[in-house]
Image (cartoon, rainbow, N blue to C red; front, side, top):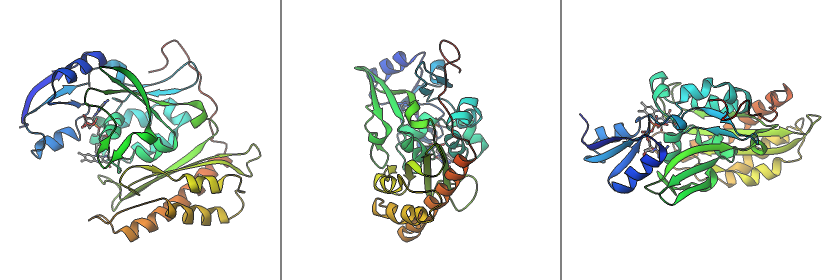
Length: 308
Ligand SMILES: Cc1cc2nc3c(=O)[nH]c(=O)nc-3n(C[C@H](O)[C@H](O)[C@H](O)COP(=O)(O)OP(=O)(O)OC[C@H]3O[C@@H](n4cnc5c(N)ncnc54)[C@H](O)[C@@H]3O)c2cc1C
């Protein structure tokens, strides 16, 4: 049994905001794979829950008029991985969330919950960092857009206010067009394993496929919050894909920007080794995908309201 004071089923985002504003003890529940585990452990016992699970507008993926991909935060991982828009434009994000837990967790857990729990180990985190994803937060004072790179303030902590609902995750064309990417997760086993380390590398090559025009490197668990390694990214820009020094550069430069800790899962030293090695491997795969002509063009909205 769960020790819950009240369970409210919000009918709309506005309704959820109203319920959260009226009940200071209330917490949002989406898929519940974090919230219910926490309650079962006795944390937050006696609190109320505001469910956003039935709000239709929070589910699915669509393309806006300007080519922006809009991801509904209540979309579960399985639906995200299998969505044709994700597979076509940001497949590495679908691959990343396909590493979460096991099938039951992926059918129930949502990308919005994965972002809002504030965990550095969240498997969507590294990819969303490299995508410069923009989070639409709707609260009593209206809607604000927060870049995911400015969302996390510490372990399990974010800038989201109590009355705010994550309404959408936006990925703009300039952040996905022409890019290929790869997410690699290290864990001691292949399933039901929180990341010891997660790394996403994305590249856009020049039209001839010879040089790296832009590289983006994101990590989970390499620091108390998900991070980007912008110094290493800058060093890679302009380098030839045939020059093996790119792997030295990425493996060495990222170490200047990370701050992993020792935990029961792994020592700091082992994590540092993973940070270099996963980046090298992910870069190699991202380049291979680009040379294999897998980089997407701009998405177009197929009909008004997009494709859910
Ligand atoms: C057995 C098991 C294995 C797991 N394995 C992994 C793993 O390998 N990788 C991984 O990353 N995670 C893993 N998780 C954690 C969990 O499944 C994910 O974090 C999941 O994404 C949470 O989504 P949810 O919808 O279930 O969130 P919930 O539990 O409903 O909510 C999580 C938090 O986010 C808030 N929230 C949710 N949606 C919104 C919204 N739209 N707006 C504002 N706040 C919101 C809630 O208030 C709560 O604080 C695992 C969990 C379990 C139980």
